[in-house]
Amino acid sequence: MGKETLTITDNRTGKTYEVPIEHGAIRGMDLRQIKVSEDDFGLMSYDPAFMNTASCKSTITFIDGEKGILQYRGYPIEQLAERSTFLETAFLILHGELPTRAQLDEWTYHITHHTMIHENIKKFMDGFHYDAHPMGILVGTVGALSTFYPDAKNIMDPANREKQIYRLIAKMPTMAAFAYRHSLGMPYAYPDNDLTFAGNFLNMLFKMTEMKYKPNPVLERALDVLFILHADHEQNCSANAMRSVGSSHVDPYSAVAAATAALYGPLHGGANEAVLRMLREIGSKDKVPEFVKKVKAREALLMGFGHRVYKSYDPRAKVIKNLAYQIFQERGTNPLLEIAIELERIALQDEFFVKRKLYPNVDYYTGMIYEAMGFPVEVFPVLFAIGRTPGWIAQWQEMLLDSEQKIARPRQLYVGSGKRDYVPIEQRR
Image 1: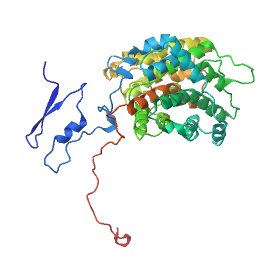
Image 2: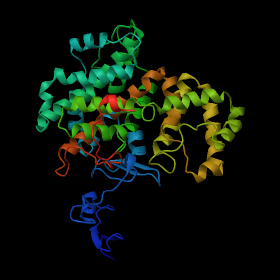
Image 3: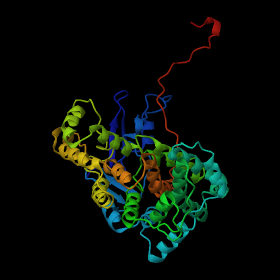
Image 4: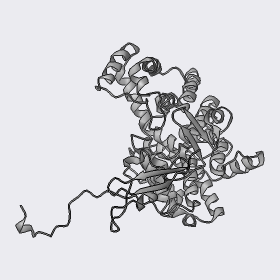
C-alpha cells in the first residue's frame, strides 16, 4: 500500500510538495507552504458553504449519504427510533454511551425537575407582540436565559456544564410551549413532573381546563420518535452556528440562541412547511403527473426531495413514513397523504429524479404528521429545535474540549478595489 500522502506540483514554480493525508483529508494549513515567493501569503482553499471542507473531527454522528446511513455514536437511527426514548438518546449523544438503568433514572430526574422557568422569563415573553412567530420568541427567550444564569459563563467546569445541559434540555419545551400559547393569547400551562418528556410538552401545549392532562399515548410516542430523529445531524447549518458562536467561549444559552436562529430559516427548519404548501398547490392525486412535468421543465420546485448529504433514501424519512400511518390511523387521514404517496411513487420511478438522486428527505412527511397531531405550521421549527437541542450541546461541548479548535475565523479571497485615495464630496461624480 502506498504512503498516506498527496503529492502536489505547483505549475507556477515547478516545485513539488508532499502533504499528509489523515482520515481522507488534508489539512488546509498544509497548503500555506505552497508559495510563489517568500512574500506570498501561501495557497488557500476556496469552498463557499463548506461543500467539501471538514471543520472538525467528531465522534457524535456518522452519515453515509450514498448508502443512506445515519448513526448516533455508532447506533443506527432505525434501532434508536424503534427501541429508545428521546431522553435516553439525548444521554447517548451527550455522553457517548447508552445509560445504565441508574444513570437513566438520574438523568431523567434532573431533566424533569429543571422544566420550570423563572416567572420573570414569563414577563419577558409577555412583552412580545400577540402575533409574534413562536420561533422568534424562542430565539429571544433562549438568549435571555444567559442573564438569568450568569454561572453558565464558567464553561470549562464540567459540573457547571452539566447543570446548564439539564437546564437547556428541560426548559426548551417549556419556552416553546409558552411561545405557542402566547401567540394564541392563552394562559401558560405549567410543567407536570408526572409526565414523560414528550407527554409533558403536549400538556403545556394543549391543556385546557382539565385538572390533569392525559396525553394520547400514540401521539406521545410519535413525538418522542420525532425528537429522536431530529436529535443531531452532523455539521448542518445550525450545528455549525452553535460551534462557531460557541468558539468565542460565550455561554451555552447564547450559542443555542444562535443555533435556533439558524434553524429558523426556511432552508433549514422551515422546509417541511414548504412541502405542505407544494402538496396543497398540487391539489389532488390526478394532478401529480402534470406537476412532475413542470418540475422537469424547471417551472416548479420539488420540495422535500433531495438532500445536501443524502444521495439515497434519507433513513429518517423511512421511519417517518411508517410513523405517518400510525398517526393517521389515530387522528384520521390527512388528505395530502394520497398526493404525497403518488408524487413519491412517480418520482422514484422517473429517470429524471433517479439520475439526480432525488429521494424523499426527513421533511417530506413530517409536516403532514405535525398537522395531523394538531400543530400549526408556525410551531414546526420549534419542535425541530426541541429535538435538536441535545445535538447542539454535544457539538458545543465536543468543540470546547477539542485542543485543535480555536475561535472560528474563516479566510476570504479579497476581490475588491485596490488602494485608492479619498475624494472630497465636491469632486465626486
